[in-house]
Length: 318
Image 1 (cartoon, rainbow, N blue to C red):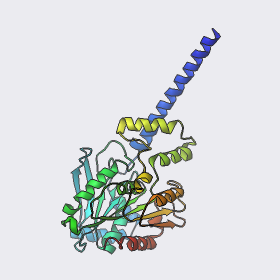
Image 2 (tube, helix red, strand yellow):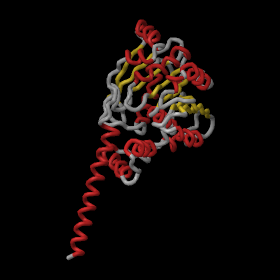
Image 3 (cartoon, rainbow, N blue to C red):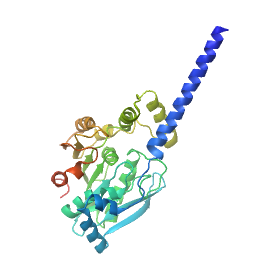
């Protein structure tokens, strides 16, 4: 009788444990990928207030009717995707695809777009990633499946900017989740007109980033919740936290890459840039930005950021 009661108690305890873990896994996936308050409003006035140097440039684009947007249907998902773009009359094929971060939208990349368009005479294309901005989608993809959408935008660039593929020279530049997306793109086969990449404060993998957040925000270890949540993400959305690895992708990158990371970043911890940089074969540069927090390298060092990006990209996108 005592043994029976013990087994019943153990069984009930285990069932309760499974119920708690299952509920927590659903909560984590929903918290990280679905219920995030993404900025769906392309309100440029917010960017103009935060970055006053952008306003005169935007005013000139508006006056010329040069700032446009477009919607396309993504072949991988069948979902409608949105992007802003600016065609420069002096680009001569120079083009930048700029990828925003988690919960942001294309307008957040306008300060970086200004660098490329105004100071480097480049066309710029700013996509809203899946489930961000004006793009459709039910759950954030953390840069992993986004790599396929960005590759599609890259394939559309010659037609969008009225040039031939042979004359196009293109850089992909991303910040935070956009940087992880950029690195994931870099490990895929890209058109010959893609010349280099710039990643600013991207994470090594979704597993590493979520594990860090689980520990710092909730004080919880990776086991068992990361394992069950990753399995649930795979079941619901067709990808898991381990496969979504910028580190594995960047190790396959054959094109030049500039790595930028603030040395005071605790959201995507600074340590992550070192294995990324080491994994990247071939041509590369690393700029550790003193005192910069997460995604603040441009905000806090505008002139130097501009100079570093122009010097690096200018070697490959002439």
